[in-house]
Image 1: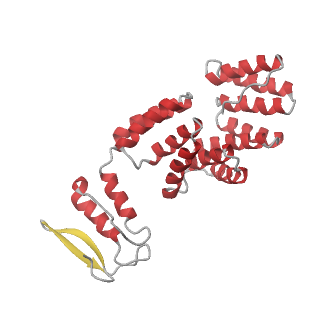
Image 2: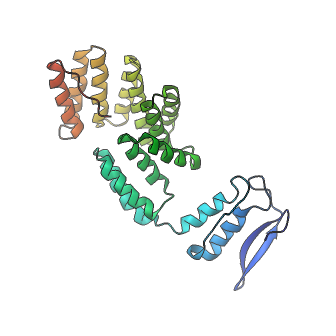
Image 3: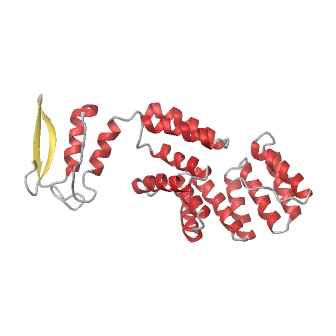
Amino acid sequence: MAPGNLHMSVCVAVDTVCIRTDAGPAICGVRPSADPLFMTAAEVFGENLVGVVLTGMGRDGSEGLRTIRALREDHLGASTFIEKGWDLISHGDFKAAQATLETALLLAPSDRRALSLMGWAQMRQGNYDDALITLDQVLAEDPMNGLARASLGYVCLRKGLLRESADHLDRASRQTRDPKAALYGWFYMGMLHAAERDLPGAEECFRKSIALAPNFVEAYYELGRAYFAAGELAHAHGAWRSGHMANRFNIWGRRCADATRESQAGQEPMGFS
């Protein structure tokens, strides 16, 4: 047990494991803190170490436990399933993506990319409460995670929390760390403006997402729907034609062609996003 007002850590002296104490700065507002003990023990004992927190003050010990947990995770093995999960999401197979990402998280439970994509797969299946829990977990550990931020903005949009949605999507679209997050930040912001019947705002945001990824056909589809809702049929057909030409074999390219036919028949094209 650490003496009062001193941190305790583990070290190796020659070939002997030792305990040492120091009066370093308070961590999480406390001294002694569990974090130096856990982190140094992880360096010495590696994956043979088990960390347990029974009680404590605030977040004390959380960073140390995260260090211990990371030693037991197989991030390399998880990466294959993460890439497959992203590929399934990009093709719209969100149920299969979730199953694949669950495998990734069995191998590396704290992998933030896997968790971000899991939240995305959950939300696109309409499981907004589950997605909210997953995305909040990511952002609690990494507030700058743009993809989780963009996804959370979408969840808020679907739950009718428009002000919160706009805040999250604005932050995601303007960050520069993750271009994919910026792309979807602008795209979901376009959907938010479309839901508010703000055609100029929707058009600007969809165009910005297309500028970031010219083959992002889903944005052409939703841009066309925004024009259609505003009665701008010629512009709607132009957007869908551009989307179909961008990739006629992609599911969104086919949906663009279907939307043109449906609108010409007086039917409103479905929303899929």
